Picture 1 (cartoon, rainbow, N blue to C red):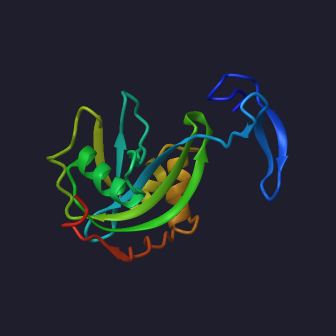
Picture 2: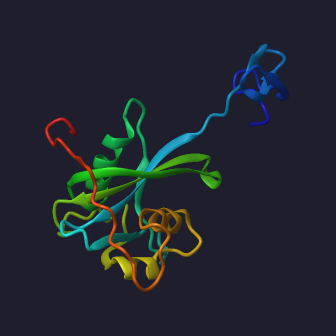
Length: 183
């Protein structure tokens, strides 16, 4: 952030006790902490936990993970459930946090989760948001996910960075979703 979001003046770097160097507006006389979006991405597994759902969106042929922005007032866990349902028609029955990473291209902090869907039925696919969705074995998902992408990084982190051959199964998700309170 180079300019104050209140008055538009150029920010200067200034030390703030316990925080380090933070952008500062001399006109407003206040520190301006970074503002960014928050989103979730999901490694969606089938009920048997032996397949991963990859999607293609926006006219590209890149296979990526289901993802979406967290709405104001919503927590990340509810965004996981909502986004999977909105984009694929699937219901999340388990989810577990995997890792997070800042994505500079869209100024977004991404929270990645591994989750289990209630079925493999893609008849509820939202074709306005998703061009194509397909289930892959874990090894196939590694081979077919967009190379050098954040989606690939999250997928590999979820399986301990393993690559082709001898791929361990994804860990069992530990959080069962209470479907009554999730909607």
